[in-house]
Image (cartoon, rainbow, N blue to C red; front, side):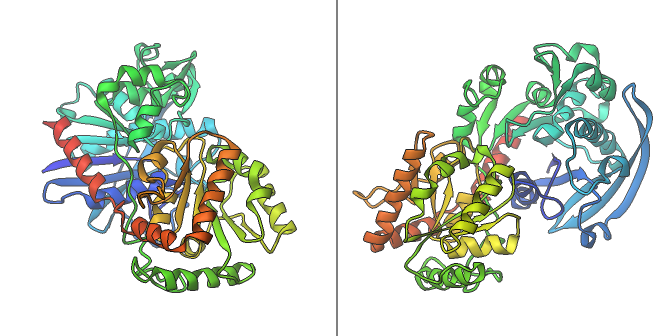
Length: 482
């Protein structure tokens, strides 16, 4: 039996701001439990719903130092079991008592230094000796650093190895060296250019990349892209140097949570055989709910996304007037940068028969949009993996994507000559290419309905559940820990 510990800042169903939470909450359930005891540790945020928090079990508490800054900081340990997985929660109201998991950068830096050190201090107390500590994103970046510095002579951690998974390289946990050294208590010799130092500051994610035994990211293509200057966010040299200890393993989605055959949130359940009637009924219900003209003949495109530049929305803005012809409706769900929130609000006000702008996030509406739209649009500048296109495929909503990261790995483009492919894609980050690709998708939808239906069926039958990815992680755990 191998002991695996996931360390992360968020996890479904307790707290979620992005795809990281889906991975941390779903992947541990997919491992062979006769071979792997996988547990998860996250902060005990005050914003975790009471239905869970009220049932957390108190395990223990103690006090630890925070470098030179604080000599005695409270560390509480709470426990909860869900779907056979043990979850631990690091309890400290000062750090985790806010209304959301993240705050301003300076406080987040301190909060996750505390979290990383608390994780190391908690493990001997709960007597869980991990063979692998699997760290996720910059918030857990100091765990491998602590293991190789302050805890390197601690016999409890003999044989413990670390894996660091990059979910999004853009976010790195950067602050000045003096502050991070003071809060972390790490020795001076780790703040050098070959370790944590980064342009005269300290970089927590870089610490994880330097000290982890192995690095993964969330798709094969992204693993290659981040070794180039364009996608490497200033760390491409380090990632090239660690090339032999780096791989991509594409994310999956929870096929129980996203299943049009059993989904109680959608208007009409359907599967890969009955989707034609099912999706038509869901489209009508969605149009009616959102106040759009109810017309099955319209081509309904959805954007379910954080509304940020990373998601390619400047390309959408460039082409939007030409995308919105009389046969097309656009449904947007998400929040983000004010410029894009206001863009879609303005179009919805001006063209309320063509655009529905839902500037918030609602899980129930997301399911209805996946079930009721014909295509889901993901034209990202970069996309480590992306879950939107995977959920779209599951619900028969054909992905239109840019060929980057996980989008390239998961959406085989339609080929009308040999009848293959499950979506549409374009290569260059260019608004005209986006428009041409959407127009080509419309052509197939309106003029080749049989081919469109075959493509929907192929997409729905494609397996992007966690099963395949879990096997790859198991192989990696075995290889590193032996």
